[in-house]
Image 1 (cartoon, one colour):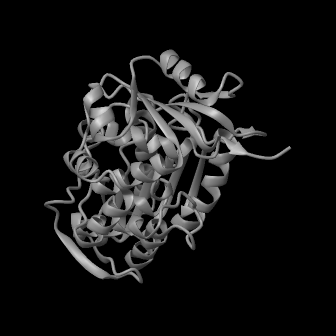
Image 2 (cartoon, rainbow, N blue to C red; image 1 turned 180 degrees about the horizontal axis):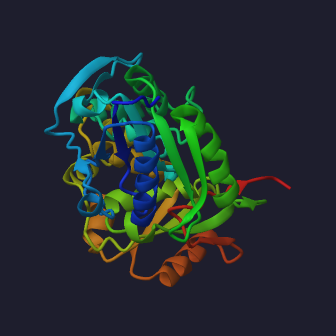
Length: 353
């Protein structure tokens, strides 16, 4: 891909650990310069939420992409009707490289694939249209035939042209278990199975009660914390109880999530509203409503009970132990309890004996 005199663009997902970003960028710079690339531009993947990540801007000279104010070019429309507007400066680069990490995602199944472009380098309208596909059906599958959000993002990637992808699989301790590199889609198809090997323990029975800890990053607010619920779906029996442990020290996290959760306690009413008036943030409310239809959900957090119970229909508790005791009373004293300490990374898989 690289030729003498070329301009290269490196698009970085900021959730990649900072030390890993620094090492990878240095290696990429060295290799590109050896191939005669004259200019290397660094971009940081945009995030529309207020998720707090390790910023590499000061150390690496990264330009942060803004989905609200960027200079975008329309490159086409997907089969789902999403008009794809991507960052012009990135598209203009002769060589394009993505730096990403595989983690579970409630909407697209996993990060580390085409999400580096959509939502990563897309306009706000493009992101909203992509996420609105959740109205047609929620699926955490990485099969593009089943997951409309993922397949839509792959179409956008193919319109944009090839990216050389450097994708990491985390080890769960802040470092890297494996690295895959090459064409983005092929790399994604290799990296996801490796992630599942490392972070998908087999269970021979679904539990009555599953305690899932959202972790420091996703557990900082409810908007991100509830996404971890999808990681527990494979471990809990139908209509069983999920106890979400998310500190929520930064509160709710998104005004639209709060607004739509308050206004619509019924999933059908919410879906009807979103078909006419979709707004980013409401898709997380839709996801939560779907989860509440399938399971009893308790929340262990510092949020006032009023928010948890009245706005989001979650049963509040102050400690995980009290939530477990309440669940056992509801499920019966013989209830099987499973605790997922790294709920943000772990994907238990039910395998019948």
